[in-house]
Length: 198
Image (cartoon, rainbow, N blue to C red):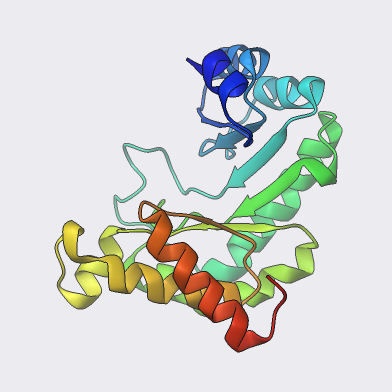
């Protein structure tokens, strides 16, 4: 599937995996980016595969594991702790041979965070500019939007677009979204209002 897509489209393909073997196989098949929700890992096998392939790497912050992440997440200062996590992972990634130029950071909205943690991170996205690396944000249709505005998953487009426009104004470079056409239109309008080149 990845080989066919890589031959048939003129875009970079991203693989979302925690597993080094899956990442290696996907990169060999033509994927160009590894999105790693397990960047809080203790081993570096996946990072070596990214380094060898010269692939892009999305370093996502998550407290706990996918099974435990929403079991009462606690932070003294979520923005500071996520920033410290990125600084530590940057050092470890570099030691594994992954260059800074390969790395994108994702604060992990909804990954081991309460509603208030998510809002604190969104309010202070600009703080992460000091990392000097692109930021990726995935907020599309997330449950915290539903909890905040009382909307079912199918009715969260307005909240998702509000977050996307805010993120752009705060310096986020990449948005993950379900509603591509609507998000592109909102982004183009936001760029025009901010006076940014398209």
